[in-house]
Amino acid sequence: MKREERLLVKYYRLSLEDEADRESNSIRNQRKLIEDYVEEREDLRELGSLELSDDGYTGTNFNRPGIKRFLDLLKKNQVACLVVKDFSRFTRDYIELGNYAEQIFPFMDVRFISVNDRYDSSFQSSHDGLEIPFKGILNDLYSKDISTKVKAAKRQMIKNGKLCSGSYPFGYRKKEQGEINRDGIPYRIDEEAAKVVRLIFHLALQGKKNIEIARVLNEQGCLTPGMAKRKNGSFGYGLKEGERSVWDSTKVLNILRDERYTGTLIIGRYRGKGVGSGKVEETPEHMWFRKEMGMPAIILREDFERVQSLRPRGKRGAYKKEHHILYRKVRCANCGHFLYYKPSEYGVQYHSFFCKQPHLRPDSECFRGYIKEGEILEALLSMSRVQVRLAETIKAESKRKGKGEERQQAKKRIERLEKEIERKKDLKAQCYSEYKHGELTKKEFLRKKENIQAEIQVCQQEIQIIRESMEDMQEDEKELVERYGGYEDDIKLDRDMVERLVEVIWVYDVGRVKIELK
Ligand SMILES: [Zn+2]
Image (cartoon, rainbow, N blue to C red; front, top):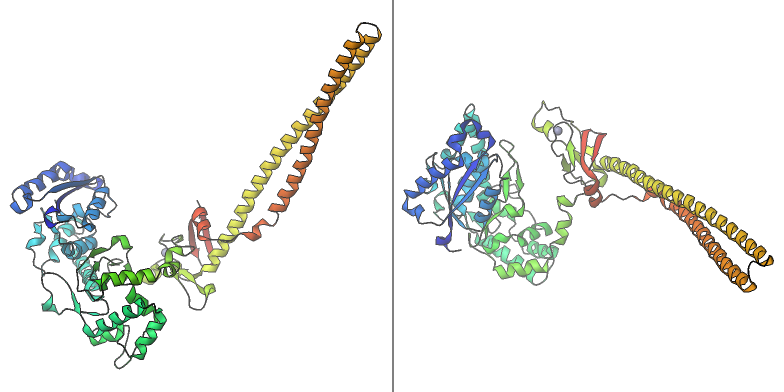
């Protein structure tokens, strides 16, 4: 999309929490305010514009149709400018606000305007950027303990900012403070390391395995990511002065999978988990922002793609968290959070779950221990056994009942048929006596007798058929018993079954779980 085709987005939001101030926040008022603002400015007036709004949605998350559409356009680089009445229309999550105002919008070259906050990103210098977005939203939300929250949030954002530029890939180095120009590209190529990256891709293109590549690198004494970080003045992987680290297949794989070597700058890949936690987590890929040619390339894109096609991603996927059998099913019964999974290097029987709360707050009432994965699986398994047995018993019972009714009806039918045969036999005897007494001619008698005999035969055949089918029924029942006896030994838990059966597994303590079925 050409620059001039990118849009000016006017975004309005009204939520129930605005009740007190409903009139001034009404969509109509937001629209008027923004339209007046845009109308006065020639550079904005020229842009094609789009209105997006969310009525009845909270600003504490991005789960809003209008904002989702906006983010979608943003990712496609179709937004030139975003205008809102105040910051809290866009988001009430001030960490998120910081992320967007400080990182994502500048990165995507989006001008951000908040009319009532008198904020326009094109007039902010890079130094006062941080303070301003906070004013509005903090006044709005956190007027009481601004100072501590601002400090915490700023710390967090500085960390996040570092994550963008701080976790620069091997092969690059951070620019010095004065070097970062208006293009915002935070890295430049570190030639010594870039040579190693090129060698890795070169060997991979020849079809070498990761471990073979690692061996070659170690033989040649190539720089490792840890050594490069130390060389560039940051501490890498706890590497001490004079210590050497070696290449292994994981390190090689990480290089080969890193799209940034093609010059694509990626941000939004990691995010802070919350103020003060200091922890970061990787975001799902659809939340990343990519900018091709956003940084200097070390590897040609064709070569990168070729290496990816040579190495199917399947294996790594197999270890993904979401493939774990209990993924997002186990929660703390006290605080409701998902428990953390702690795989053990000592073997599957030691993998465990724990609640993080007691580690964060000493006064937490959540359980403190580690509950073994096996313990939960065992509970789940015995629950499933009971369930399966129950289900099968019910099924068998209803089948048996059905068969019983069928059999009763069959018996009745046979009785009726036998009576019918008796009646027809009587009829036959009557015909004979009528013939004897000269009431029927011989010809008439023989025809009647033949007819009655045929009818009796039909009845007898039917009885025969019913009797045979009743024997089949008995066979069926025997089979049912054989099939369901001992069934529970065959149950195997898999992710699919857990997904289908289990709503949530509540953990009260080590050894105490409650399984909530769907
Ligand atoms: Zn808890």
